[in-house]
Amino acid sequence: MPVVYVEQIGEWEGKEVTLRGWVYNRRSSGKLQFLLLRDGTGVIQCVAFKGNFPAEEFALLDGLGQESSLEVQGTVRRDSRSPGGFEVDIARFRVFQAAENYPITPKEHGTAFLMENRHLWLRSARQHAILKIRHEVIRACRDYFDDRGFTLVDTPIFTPNACEGTTTLFETRYFDQTAYLSQSGQLYNEATAAAFGKVYCFGPTFRAEKSKTRRHLMEFWMVEPEVAFATLEETMELAEGLICFILERVLSRRRAQLDVLERDIGALERIVPPFPRISYDEAVKLLQASGSAIEWGGDFGGGDETMLSERYDAPVMVHRYPGAVKAFYMQPDPERAEVALCVDMLAPEGYGEIIGGGARIHDSDLLLERLAEHGLPPEPFGWYLDLRKYGSVPHAGFGMGIERVVAWICRLTHLRETIAFPRTLYRIYP
Ligand code: 4AD
Ligand code: MG
Image 1 (spheres, rainbow, N blue to C red):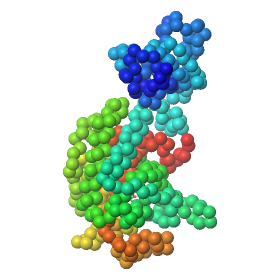
Image 2 (cartoon, helix red, strand yellow; image 1 turned 90 degrees about the vertical axis):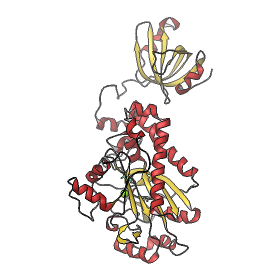
Image 3 (cartoon, helix red, strand yellow; image 1 turned 180 degrees about the horizontal axis):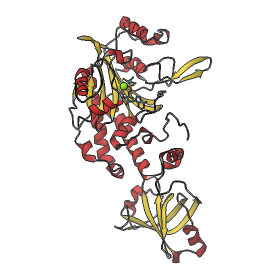
Image 4 (cartoon, rainbow, N blue to C red; image 1 turned 45 degrees about the vertical axis):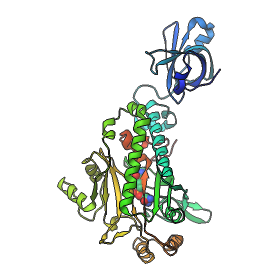
């Protein structure tokens, strides 16, 4: 008898199949048992008639708690009253494990309790929908770059140097040396871009973010393209294209999950290129006019980003921030040395930064100067400086945080639901 998944059940109408999964919910009406079976791909109602089973077997079914695991065999029947349009008449079943007192019940639970039970919470419809969308976003990123001639080159996680400032480094022992967990694959991407032209890396990155916010995780996944000879403008186009591609994929393939989340789909459908592009100077003026205390030269706070991103239907790209508030590797604008050729993309609906990137310094002397200004020792950057000695070219790229994008697309209030096992300031369990 074929073992099938709920998502393909429509292909088996009138046939006998085997399904395996977990009890999502169950109710009985004396002679009938209605069992909602969840198998990871969907939920289907399975029905058992008392008359078809020996009394003790029927009683076993009647006693099964939520999340008990079992296999059922039976005939697939079309039924418009059933959630997925099909039902299974149970002819036989086999219990793998009878669960009791599953802690997550249909009643409301507090976030702390749910986070403590994250390993089980993942089975809930909402969490399942979010992680299916996350997978779609990740797949779209890979397809976008793969289809455009980029080579995926993985970058290391143990690193000797800081990429995004020394205040958020996770330090660890590396035998008799000190190493840091990677904050970004960018510096290594710059080396591989000189070998392959167009590259991307896609992996976990780590930041010891000591402030507790809804927008920061200690461990998050970033996709980072890097392109030799690219300009800031080309980088903005690449970023805009990526976001449009992701949205198109999620809207066409994950509508059911967006519906589970009750996402306003119109807000996503209205997003079309070109996205607004404004300079940091213009952004500061807009913020001041809206009552922000920001002065030219300062970095945007979370509130400023929210305010800016609420102004537009589409993500907004803010370019040319003052070099002083950005990382050491940012290429200064040749027309105006105090600003960097960089860009942040802020997602709408108040979500704030989802992408950061720009052009990198390709001159060796300037790079040495900047390392010194940022208090970074040149020795661990020897290899990085080599890239400026052997065929240095202008180049640019960006990093997009997967969790930030998923939070926005799913319209979640906190990043902790965008990843299976979030690492937050106060929690490393489970
Ligand atoms: O703006 P960031 O710090 O830029 C870089 O790391 C560059 N080296 C990337 C590059 O040019 N290759 O981080 C990039 C993105 C942010 O826009 C945000 O989406 C995400 O990474 N991000 C975080 N996501 C979750 N938790 C955190 N603590 C994050 N920090 C950054
Ligand atoms: Mg940034």
